[in-house]
Image (cartoon, rainbow, N blue to C red; front, side, top):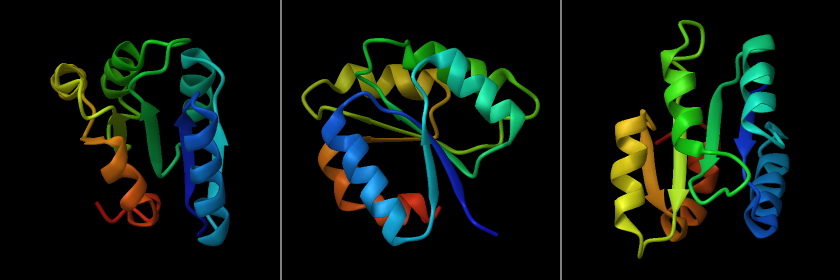
Length: 120
C-alpha cells in the first residue's frame, strides 16, 4: 500500500524538499492551499501522515491541528509540525493544539525520509 501524505506547507523551499523526497520514496504527497481544503481532503481519503508548517500565514496551523484531533475519523492520523528553532513558544502552542511531533526546521529536514516513512 502506498503511503499518502497531506501537507499544509507554504514555504516553496520546504514544499520542494518534501515533494522530491517523497518521490524518491514512492510516497504520494498532496499540498493543500487552505485549512479547509486539507481537512476536506483528509476526510475524503484518510492519509498516513499530515505535515504542518507552523509558520503558515494563510492558515492557522494550531486551529487546524485542534480540528483534526477533534475529528473521530482523523484523530489517529499523526501530525508533524516544523518551526523556526528560535521561536520556542510555537512548539508549546503546537503541542497544546494536538500536533504529535514538533521539531525545528533543521531536524525536520534531516529526518524527512524517516518522517515520510512514518518512522518518527
